[in-house]
Length: 369
Image (cartoon, rainbow, N blue to C red; front, side, top):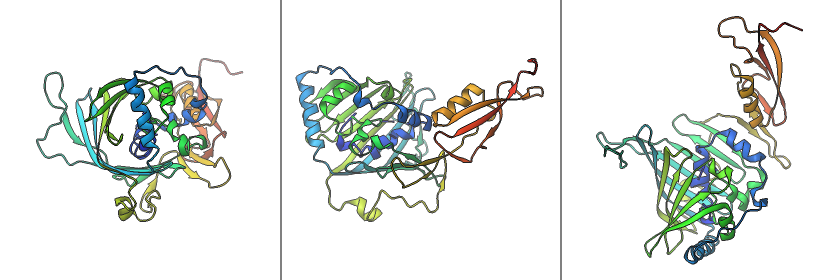
């Protein structure tokens, strides 16, 4: 779920590339990421500028000005994840770090829940949600790749960042309104509404105008500190409206010369030590050669899938599926037009554009030609 998603301002570009683009990507599937790579650059789209009240126009301008001054950012965060269907609340905490223009890190640790402690959120009958610890994970962006690290399983996945999304263009990620996006661009990309403007806090409601953003969240609310224009909290309503995530921030420090990030992680905190971790997921290699870098993917298993679903899965990863008629479906468990063999085999590696051959069970009532 840049990872969703995750809303613009360079200040949080990676206090939210770490703290949000990366977080939101945790909620996205690799298929969604691959689809985004195929879309045209939304910066090229012609979008109508939204007219805003003068007070909100001034806030956006000040937010942009303050964000441009930030080269480094670090702080603490608490994350609340809510599922309104199952009435579950998950609690996590950790730290986040950012270095301009496109490096970020967030460490997330599930909070141990004392026996009998109840969640803050309640259902319509006043009964508190069931409180559980959140997941233990890390997200690291080195400017070229995003590392999704599962601390419980000691495993990780890698998501390459397209060339046109690197650097300052990372604001085209899932939560760019946290990243210092120019005010004019923010008005084109979002419906914005000023909910509160006091000396204590500013709250802005954000709704996506683009389909790509709406796939990650249906609505967001951003709380800013009026003195620093750094975020105090962010709420994300996920598509469907049955799940939401709230991030609160504390001890946020900008442009600190030698902060905790250096003391704990050494000279380069954005290069993870993964010697004891196992690579998982689809991306298995990223060459350091010419642009664009060559990425090798694990070929997913389509066996047992309907041929339409199998083709869609492969196309979303950039492969070229090719369907071939095979044996007739005659035995129990053999379903016509479903894949029963593929080449290359599942788990082997292939590059974008490679052909994946799918062998299907055929209809036994259809005579052979």
